[in-house]
Length: 178
Image (cartoon, rainbow, N blue to C red; front, top):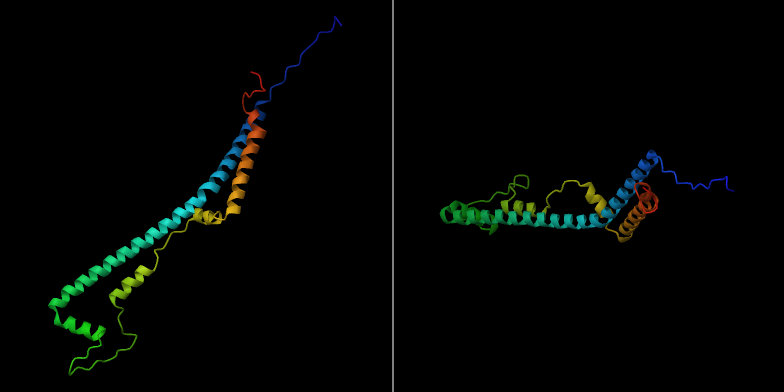
């Protein structure tokens, strides 16, 4: 046994291509996992924010229409004081007034003009159009709790896989020597 040398085998370092591939897969899995967790937690809040913004826009449109209606009414009230013809026409139209010696001719529905207050109120009732948003569609899909929790669990599982399978390959971990 004297002639035999006792050798200790040192672990062979991994080739650089294997180390780079491990780092690549680590970043792929952890990025996918973080993206899934972020989507599962942030997109439902984005949907709630979009709903609040839509409500805010609808209320702002209604306030603007109310201001238009108030300005119209102010103009009509100011004009009624100075214009007797306008006063007579308003009485005929809204108060079913028939002046003596005048005949009122019904012109039919095709010639009737839409009154300004009705147009303004109709405009206030229609919500403003919203541009299409693909993130909002995904957020509405994630509003359901089982779907959201499944996506978060999938993201955490993918993150754990990336860390457990590929984290030790990329650098000097506790089990590697320099």
